[in-house]
Amino acid sequence: MTDGTTYVCAFRGSRDWYQTPLALAEDGLLDQFITDAYGTPAVRSLAQHVSGKSIDTLADRHVPGIPDGRVRCLWSVSIREQLRHWIGASPNGTWLQYDPYYSLAAAERARRSRANLLLYSPYAWEAFVAGYTHHPRRVLFQYHPHPDTERRLLDNDASRFPAEAANRELDRRPQIEHLLRRERDCWQHADLIICSSGFTVRSLIDAGCPAERCVIVPYGVELPACEITSGPDHFHALYVGTGSRRKGLRHLLLAWTSASLPKGSRLTIVSRALDPGLERLAASTPGVELIKGASAASLNRLYETSSLFVMPSLVEGFGLVYLEALAHGCPVLGTTNTCLPDLGAEPDGIFLTPAGDPDALSDVLERLALQLRGNHDIRRSARRTAERYPWPAFRQSLRRALHDSR
Image (cartoon, rainbow, N blue to C red; front, side, top):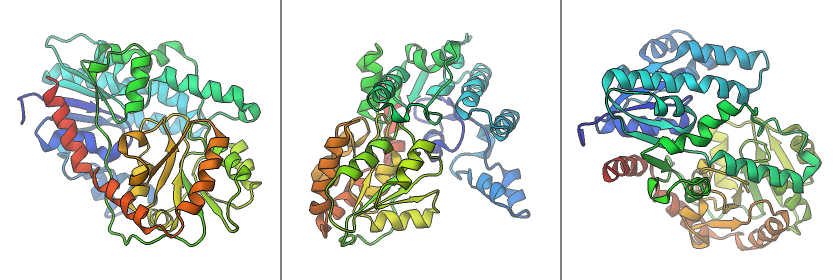
């Protein structure tokens, strides 16, 4: 234990592959990790006797470095969430309504154990404003940019490119003021705010947050064993992500259509959830292949055999897929509204374009279609960039931020 204090950590899903609670557990700082569905000993035992994709996926939600006795699953909340998804309720609306349960559970645990709080932004409000007999330290992990910045950028883009405005379910959040306030204002009650990118910090500053309250801790990546080649002979761009306005896929398709690219150029889109309007646009765009989901092995092969990974997000807290592509030696192209300015520049295999500008994106695609062909050096540089950000470095930086800011 570093300083004699422990933290309650809470979030839904396998976010960041559980690296934050693992960072706490490695140094004896984890009091309890509160989540939805996790690979508990009972789940892992069941998976050994019952086959099925669902149970196997659940069993995989487990990190050996996090003691099982430190994990609490809110199974009843998780079941209710899944039932709402099953009957077709809006996922965003469901998450907004059920996020408070994780925060309330964190507050209850902190009261009993007199622990501090390290909570991801959707799960912080109730715990941060609760009353305690001790004085817990309130640490916020702001993994998305501030909601006001996100909404402003999305609304501005919708006004400039209205054709898709009617199909925004993947981005839309119900305008329920008391629920939206939870994420919008929770930074005001935080003693320390951990952000994974400078863009996220700037969004908080725009909302009135003092810069000195924020610290940047970039995410990490699992480095694969792979051979770095010179890339394909033809220009092959790859997009991996949700097919929504926020990820900039519409701008990529418009830029791809208008760009003067070498014959045989190809764009592969890998997306499990695609906005209907964008799906129709992708189907009608020459040289575009749509893959609705890919296995980890298939995705790794795509990274290794693509000339360029491109995701021109309008707003992005970080973008782990950028590091995943770089780790396979694939150069990346994104906007300044992402983590990329923090990670490097063109000599590092990182290329930038303004957010929401299809014409500028088209120009960069044309340049890179020629510049990247057979360029072994830039692919080696991309891999070296990823090597600077392994997950152990993230965990160490997070612990250092907690210690240095006391």
